[in-house]
Length: 267
Image 1 (cartoon, rainbow, N blue to C red):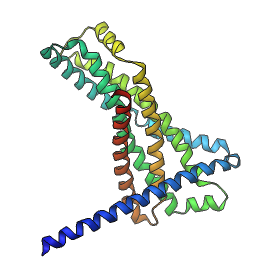
Image 2 (cartoon, rainbow, N blue to C red):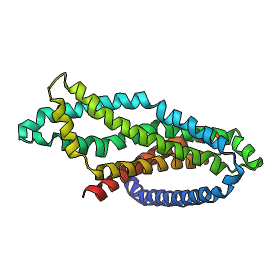
Image 3 (spheres, rainbow, N blue to C red):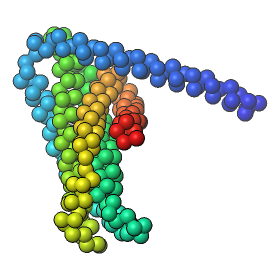
């Protein structure tokens, strides 16, 4: 009997989750509409205050995360170059070193790892910050003063995230290639001119466009989802729940979008 009851409960739970997910999609759509309509209030907000928020968010999302991104890029770049350099000759395809490095680092790992760092670090912080502002009634105070909180809170973070993620991806790829090359010299020697030429021959305009599209997409979606969940908590006890939900769903969406863009450009 217990097993039969379990089988009858599963469809109900699945249905509730599907309905809840669909409601979240509709609510997020309404959230995006409210942001679009908030641009009408742009003339009533001092641009200097928006500029200050953008600068502070760039410092937190980009500059403060720079050291961590560089360390991760060095480790990944060095590992990939060492593995490729030692294993490709076994298969007689050492001439494809540049192609493999561009495919693994520039096309996939660079944008994806950078997005994961921003989500786990800045995305969760955005949700917490906005939720605390709502719980402490700072957002309510701004609304009473006539400030459009959607425009004042969300738009500067989107702008800052796009600029930060784009810069971090460029830095990640550069450090992974050349910093990783220096690390690889400790185990295997590759002539510098040969390494550089292999990268230049493998890198294409399509790779640049793909990286820019991923940068813009990640930089837009991460703060939008973080801000959306930041406005939802009704009490301080719900803050960890929505922070966890925002991080998990953003991670899932980023993996899906990364695969989708790669399929469009390279298959």
